[in-house]
Amino acid sequence: MSFLPLPEKVNVLLVGSGGREHALAWRIRQSPHLGKLWVDNNANAGLLALGTACPEEFTLKRKYYLERWMAQEKIGFIVIGPEGPLADGMVDALATPDRPVFGPTRAAARLEWDKAYAKTIMRQTSIPTAEGRVLTTLSAALAYVTERDEPCVVKATGLCAGKGVTVCKDKDEAAIAVRKCMESKEFGDAGSSVVIEERLEGQEVSVLALVDGRTITLLDTCQDHKQVGEGDTGPNTGGMGAFCPTPLMSDADLQLIARDVFVPAVDGLRRQGIEFRGVLFVGLMLTHAGPKVLEFNCRFGDPETQVLMARFQGDLLKTLWLTATGRLEEAEFDFDPRVACSVIVCSDGYPGPIEKGRVITGLLPLDSGGAESDQWMFQASTKLEKRKKIVTTGGRVVGATCLGKTLAQASALATNLAGSVKFEGAFFRSDIGHRILRRRQIKA
Ligand code: AMP
Ligand code: GLY
Image 1 (cartoon, protein in one colour):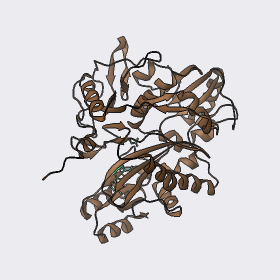
Image 2 (cartoon, rainbow, N blue to C red):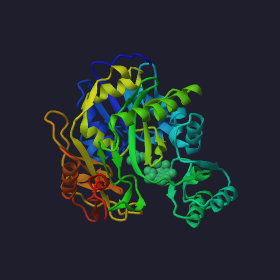
Image 3 (cartoon, helix red, strand yellow):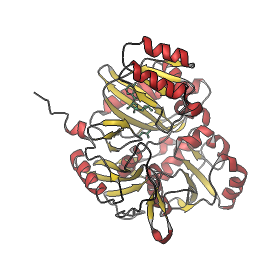
Image 4 (cartoon, rainbow, N blue to C red):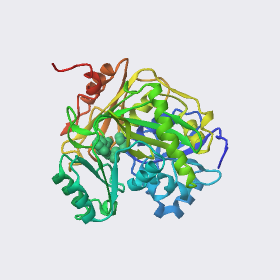
């Protein structure tokens, strides 16, 4: 696959159906190398406006059919958005010498789908992270949380769509979290073992890098607000809003993260004979004792991708192709100097159960190239119904994303834009970026 030249035109299949994919699809559409863009069979309404839906569900169970379909449609490049297909080994199964796939193999993606493995790699390569242990039986895990005095965090080791982590304030909460994973099996097999680690304090930063096996290119840093309520209160969600870049990390800080986290992680995998190609996403906590790794993801983040794509300047399709084929050093791209902020409009009840099928109005279509805008609505849980009606299908519905000269301006614009998305029970946070905007305020 190495050094495969990018054809003048290539038909692309984008796997995944959320806000991340909507933002990626929009930038891919702007590439002069794009032939036809195919999107997921269950693509949201935003994606369907940018590409054609694959006629069948895109899962490996249908590999035989999909291979025939891809040959017929001359699919030349596959881009995988979500972690599920990566963990299932979609890259291993579909990459061929003349059809690259963007994303890591199942073995490389294990950094995300097995938190115990990630902890082992971090320990072996001295990557700074929370002190913790992997427990594989209920009795050992309960004994461990009761003998600890410090507050801890309980994590199911497998993939749980962002729901397998409980930040606990005391032993009782920790024991409940352990039982949820290992006794009532709320996360199925994903919770049959747990990582229990020290609870860290600080601000969280998301650092994403493109990696082609050898070259690592860091993207601009983002911050994501995980908690559902204003002022960072309430339960964790998949992300209520994000901004990019964050002033908390200088170029010098980023160089240290590259040296202390990205290089050892990629090298650590290589020593096991595993090459990482795709996006490596590091969730960091900036603690008083320095930055520590909370998690690795092996894909673009959401909503981080919405703010990254708002600022991305260059040919995204070419950049992803060069990453997938081992020539990342040839990629040329930059970021708009302005700040991007995204505010996620959600359905009431989220992150708990929500009602689907509510009619959405006020959506802005994305321009697919040509004149640049500075505000976008990236759609996540939306569906196109008859007579062009668009309805909700999940908790996080739309990412209202804006560019501004400052974070304060971008956040105000995105909050205002979020307010123009209308459906029954819509809500959003109006304080995205507040910890940065108020960081110089000291209470006397
Ligand atoms: P993870 O999927 O491991 O990133 O965890 C999800 C979220 O839980 C993170 O984004 C943090 O907000 C929180 N979290 C995870 N690990 C810790 C930790 N050791 N200390 C404090 N908060 C954590
Ligand atoms: N925003 C965090 C994630 O994508 O996992």
